Structures are given as C-alpha cells and as structure tokens.
Amino acid sequence: MAVLTFELPDGSTRDVDVVQVLNAGYAGRSQEDVAAHVAELAELGVPAPTVTPALYPVSPYLAQQTERVAVQHGRTSGEAEWALVVAADGELLLTAACDHTDRELEVHGVAWSKNAGPDVLARRAWRLADVESRLDELTLRAWVTHKGEETEIQNGTLAELLTPGYWADVLRSRGDLVPGTVLISGTIPMTEGVEQFADHWRVELGDPATGDTIPLGYDVVRMPEPIG
Image 1 (cartoon, one colour):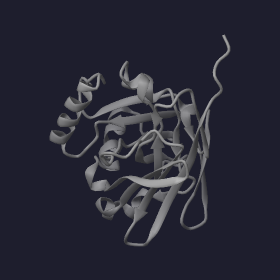
Image 2: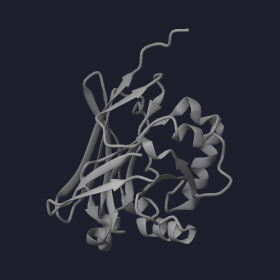
Image 3: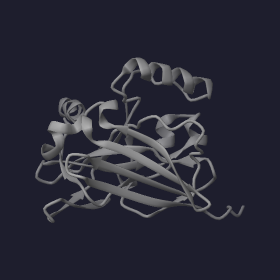
C-alpha cells in the first residue's frame, strides 16, 4: 500500500501506511446548495447520489504525494480539498489535497471516476487539534495553468464544507477511524468560465491566523496513445 510522509510545523514527521481512502462528495455545509448542485450535474448526465453527503471508497494506492499525474485524455481535472489523515498513533492530521477525477467517466459513475485518478496530498500537515478552534477561517484555494499562464479557479474557506469533526464522527460510527485512514473532504465551487482541464494544478490550504500555508502542485501529463 501507499506510505505517505508528512512534515509537521515543529519539524517532526509522521509516516502513514495508508489502509483505506474515502472521498466525500456533495459535502457542502449547506445541503440546500448541494441539492441545487446535484440538479445541475444531472443536466450534464452525472448520476445523482442516493444520499447526500456521499462517501466513495477509493483504492488505497491512489493516495499519492506526487508532482506528476498521468492521464489518458484531456478531460480530467483536480479539485481543491482538505484531507483528514489518521496517523499511526491515532492522532488526526489535516493537510491539503487534490482529487484528480476523470470527468468523462464521471457521467457513468462517480465512484468509478474517483478510482480513475490519484488523490494527491501535500507533504506538510497540521495537527487537527492545533487548528480546530479556527477551522472555518482556514482558506482553500486552487489555481490552474494553461500554456504557462496561471489562473485562480477556486477560492473559499472551510466554512463552506462539512467539518473534519463531522467526518471523524461518521468514521468512528462505522469503525473506520483507524490508523492509515485518509478522508478527502469534497470541494468548494469553481469559478465560472475558468477552464478546469489544465496542464498544471496547484492547491493551497491556508491559516490566516498564523500566515502558514500547506501547498501542493502537480503537472497533468497525457500518456501516449495506446497501440492496438
């Protein structure tokens, strides 16, 4: 399975042997807004979930700390998210993440599309306990690059999403809050008119109270055409 290494603000590191990955979906804190989003996606052919918020299991090897994501075609994209990571000692960590999704496959099944690309995680993390009192103030931003020009595509706060505490309670009730668990939060809205199918994605989780940020970034690289 994947082994991820996170550097904490005090300079210590945590190695996490990933045993399960779960991707939250339709996880906005306002479920009225989520319902409107589900209706919009349905018009694009994306199947509606049976319940919201949703939770999609993802193959553990797809949790990656990488600067390069290989894709099969030009209609894949990331999403700015946070990730809740359960360390070996049970400590809860918070980091930045980007769920790279196959948008062509999404119309056939959201769970399928989530398993067609990696969940890219940052190499730094915060202890959840250290930022939990100001979670709603934490910022989540993303930028895309097309032919060398970078454009902001997402800009919001964690107040827009269900909290890590909410998801920790869900996992605990399922018996899934175990070391090696990674939960990806779901995302915030994208800026209308900005092309999401990009050459590069960059995501940043920020703490305005301290000025600290957790960044990640990766190139999106097309694989060669298949033979046969």
